[in-house]
Length: 569
Image (cartoon, rainbow, N blue to C red; front, top):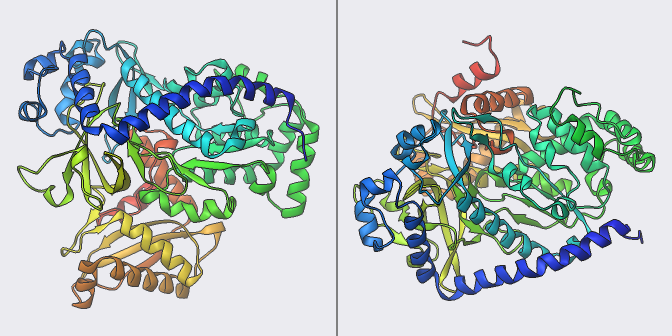
């Protein structure tokens, strides 16, 4: 058995002391969740209203800590980003009191692509960051308690820069994950194999190459942490595409993928040390398997931390193929606007609502089109119910509709346990069938197994005709080329599975109001260009990109072709 390096044992001992305090805080949170959801949420709302009560936005609506929940709802409608855009535009020019209170300092803006082409800037304040970090600490302590071996491993966390651009008054804009990473204590940063400075690499391919180099140089990696499982799969692909130069860099202690003019070149180069022994190990793995097999590159792997719900579930079969028998801990439902859930168990997308950070409200999906929908408090949800989730946060967002659909899977004492299903915008209904993205993901996963064809990337979209129907655009795993017969079998199997999952789709198909599903293959390069174009328009980062498994717009094919093949107009 390989001895644990002394430096890891020393860091583990120091970190153990820090973790004890964090575990107590996590246990306190769970005790509150078990006993006092309603009271904690009332206290959280009062604190958030008090925090920004002296902002012009709050004063214009009479928002203050003395309001009851019914009074708060009476004074502020259910909102989306447009309700706050003008105030945030004023903030960007330096007038932070437009939305924030005097004692709620602004640190940065989180740039999010949302569900539309236009990017949004979400204010990130000191209180918001404190809430964000506390939620991550609860999550992390749950992982460590479930997997004690992690205390003697290192981790690979993939994050993006918080300072990709600046507003007129000099406030950084980017990803909150980068800010949180940069604020970690030095002893905590030493627990990670990949330096925080990699977040500053703006070229996606160079960044993946650098992260892959640091990760492969460390045989003691016990966990990968990144929101999108597709990001981890891209990292593995990059490792194999660049295997020879990466192994050479590890041997020599170089990072030849970086430009010396890059701002983080010096910082990252100092972290690379020559390791001929490790390079030889990786070379031997390549000789045995023809690839850098993940289970042999990182034999100490304990678990993975990625999203598993919604469209992210489409990538789990590939991830489990790469890391067989390795448990997956869902990241929890979180976005630039805030964390919503904290999972405390492996292999489930469900997590306990983070009742200490934000005030939550819920609209039943059946009420979504009502002009006066029923709005529920957290403790009022029903097991099995599906809801749109609303947030009131320290960022000055009130009753903010995330347009995320969640399902209540039960309760932890008094607090609901929720799993993410899909974005509300990702519902397609040509003739009343109301197909959801989560149904599409489930249908493709099952169908792929039925026909023994692994679909790596896919998007379902309406296809107009007489009658209309749906077309599934796919790319097979491992660069496989699908022939017509395989495409037909995929289409038939997905169609049958969707009919089983959605009774409205079944009825429309049975009555010939919808045409049988079609399936078309698109090259891998086209999918990549499509993602790059979407990110360029929205201003998001590669780690934020959520591939749409269902696009309700029938113009998808034309837009896709124009994005991916500039010659197509």
